[in-house]
Length: 100
Image (cartoon, rainbow, N blue to C red; front, side, top):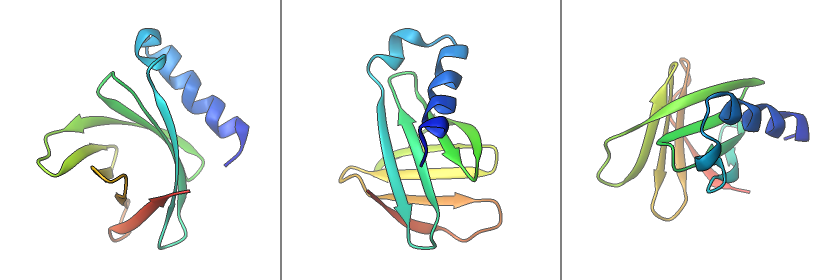
């Protein structure tokens, strides 16, 4: 992932007006089994901001008993307590993702 992609995601956070939460945010780089790569910015504002397929996507936090789940705009991201993730976007099947 390029620095430009990270800057776009960070800019989305600032535009949303969550500058206090962005101080506690964490960037995570994921690589999935189907070859998809994405950057997730996870913070205290109950949203995940992803750079996926060249587009910035904001996902809202949803209720989950097994970890953390975010969804919106046809994208679902499940993150387990161990840091592994599952991604579903578009008409693609669910794919397992690991931190890089």
